[in-house]
Length: 200
Image 1 (cartoon, rainbow, N blue to C red):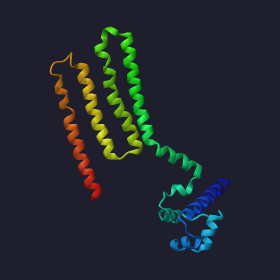
Image 2: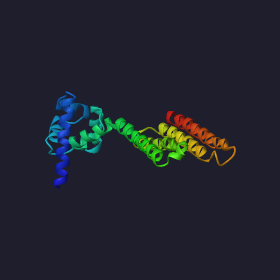
Image 3: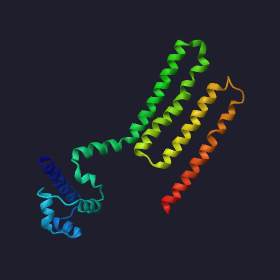
Image 4: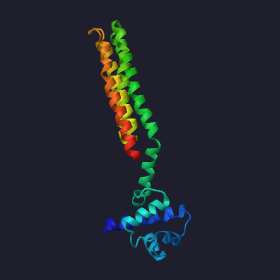
């Protein structure tokens, strides 16, 4: 019961806040919703809550997500600050991959000075790892088209790493680059089909 009262109070605070931000009166909101201003006043005092369909209407009027009417503002402010900084998070995470690659390069150069021609490969490993990091964040925040592009780039970069590792051991290793071509074509066809489906 106490939890329900807390939710009602949270919704009440949010209803008042967003109505004032929209610069409309209780009566104006009530008119838009086809309710009485007494009902709106009751909701804003926390003495009752609108049903889910009315909450959706209110969210649409204010141009917000329904979740923003249901959650405490301190939580929303925190989640918004994270979302605003998502590009910084992505850049720092990807940058960290290259810091680790640089550290690995320096360390192997110091410990294995007679194999300097191989130490630079730490940077080639960083390429597919960077695409994996970007793909993870893209699955969280990005669009499907970007995911497909990153999957394709990941496949090509892994092919490059395999080529560089095995080129000295296997003749005609460049044939490995034929493998990602059909994958790229299939992903392209899928992208075109998805875009047509979303339009139609």
